[in-house]
Image 1 (cartoon, helix red, strand yellow):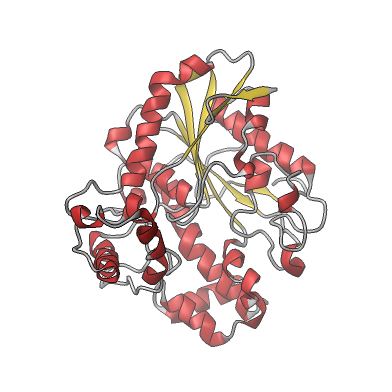
Image 2 (cartoon, one colour; image 1 turned 60 degrees about the vertical axis):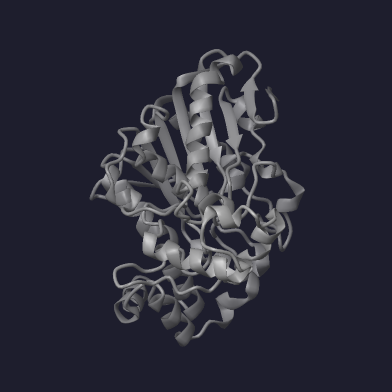
Length: 385
């Protein structure tokens, strides 16, 4: 078994030049912390990996674009942590030349951006992008709308100097007032579909930029969008107009709805709406990142949670307990728990966790890289294909 060191790294007791994994949590760029019990790294240490979890600045502090402050401060925090790992991880038994950066949701989008950041060159050997997007960044024009709105809501000038005088509580309390902003422009849709007013701010999307030559594993969940509909009951109550409005937030609704109808001919309105959300938020951007990389390994997580009367399904975040091998957490069970009331498949957790560890060791998760023939590994609890 491993031991937790200094509150962040977990290391095998006999670690010596062991592979290192660095995890970036999700939370829509406004929430989350690696203090969550789900992110306990004991299973990675047990299996010979030094795991480092990190926090980064969120919300206004981390991602509000300001003319007199560095952009993407949350991303800079992650790069600073990787530099720390490079300089110090050997003291914990880790190999600084074998670092795998992995993240989920917003953390996965940040991980993809690290691969497109020249300042991060040489810090990462491998990367895993779980339900992120290589197309998830705001343009400077979009970010400026958020900045103006936040400044107006707080009654301050849109500068870092002015925001510095606002108490931290005020910076947090104003975030809900930024929800619902129309961030569509003449040449860009809102990559976060109105779910968060913060993201990376880049002239070019990571998937449209040169990427570091590292081993890459990238994937999504089969029903990502269910997370944003099922808990509120909208998976069953959505109408044709709801579907159209959701599609309109991402592009021309006519062709977009028709394409998803062709793909899911028997689906109800809620299922089509979920598919549109999932593809807009994660699917399209993950595919583009894999294509831009050129030799990425691609997976799909498809095990269906029976939470919320069986409606949650293979939603966004459901893969996390399997990756961290943490199925036993009581908070994950029950009708409102992520894993639902039924016993989740322990064999699937063993398989996924072992795959992540194998990839960190060798860069080979056990199946060929993605090509036009779509070699995708499917994790569904019934045997992968």
